[in-house]
Amino acid sequence: MSLVEIHNIHKSFGSLEVLKGVDFNVNEGEVVCLIGRSGSGKSTLLRCINLLEKPDDGIIKVFDEDILHTKDINAYRAKVGMCFQQFNLFNNKNVIENCILPQMKVLKISREEAKEKAMMYLKKVGMDAFANASVSKISGGQKQRVAIARALCMNPKLMLFDEPTSALDPEMVGEVLNVMKDLAKEGLTMIIVTHEMSFAKDVSDRVVFMDQGVIEEQGTPDALFNHPVSERTKEFLKAFTNKQ
Ligand SMILES: Nc1ncnc2c1ncn2[C@@H]1O[C@H](COP(=O)(O)OP(=O)(O)OP(=O)(O)O)[C@@H](O)[C@H]1O
Ligand SMILES: [Mg+2]
Image 1: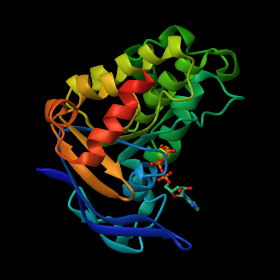
Image 2: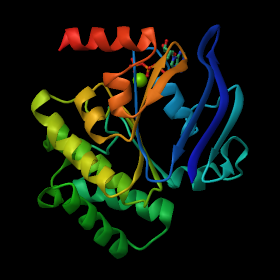
Image 3: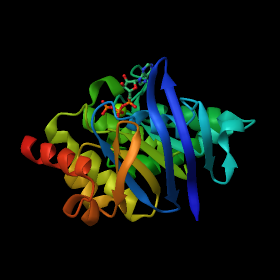
C-alpha cells in the first residue's frame, strides 16, 4: 500500500524553480534514501511532505489523505516524525523532559504515561542512562539519538530524516546510523536524505537520485549504485567516489 503519493509537484522560491514536477511514491514499510547534489531540491521535497513548505502545484496524499487541503495540520504532523541536521531539542531541559513534553502537548496523555514511553524509546536508542542529563551536556551523536527517541514517542507512521548525521563529528555518525538501521529492520516507513552512500546502500529498499529539481533516476541500491542508466547519475556517483 502506498503511504505517500506525490503527483507532479512544483515549488519555486521567487524566480528559482526548485521542484520541477516531482512524482514520488513510498510504500508502507519501505525505506527510501534521497540522494543528490546540494541545491537539487531534496530538503524542499521532504519539507513539502511535512507541510513545512507548500508546493505551488500538484498533489500530495499521505495515509490516503490529501494533505494540501487538510483541515487539521497539527493532527497530520503528529503522525509524521521528522529529524533534522540540527536537533531542535530544548537545551535548557533534560533529556527525558524533551521526550515527555511533546507527548503531553500533542498526544494529550498523562505525564506518567509519557514518561514510561520516553524511557522505553530512550532505551531503544541507548540513551536511557542519560535520561536526567542536561541536553547541553551531551554530545552531538547523543543529541541526535534523543531527537530520534523524541520523534518515536509520538508513534509516527512515517519518519522523515534530513541529513541527520551531517552536523556530527565522524566518530558519532555510526551510533546514529545504527539506530536508524534498527528502525529500518523493524519495518518503520522512512524517507532519508543522506550523503552517506554506504548507509544508503545498506539500509534502503530504494534509492532516489534527485537532480536539478526532478527525480533523475531511482531503483534498488544495486541498480542505482552499480548499474546506473542516466549519464547524470553516473557523473554524480563518479564525483562522489572520487571524493572519498
Ligand atoms: N525558503 C527558501 N527560500 C529561498 N530559497 C530556498 C528556500 N529553501 C530552499 N531554497 C533554495 O532552493 C534550492 C534547493 O534547496 P534544497 O534545500 O531543497 O536543496 P538540497 O537538495 O536539500 O541541498 P543540500 O544538499 O545542500 O541540503 C537551493 O538553491 C536553495 O537555496
Ligand atoms: Mg538539504
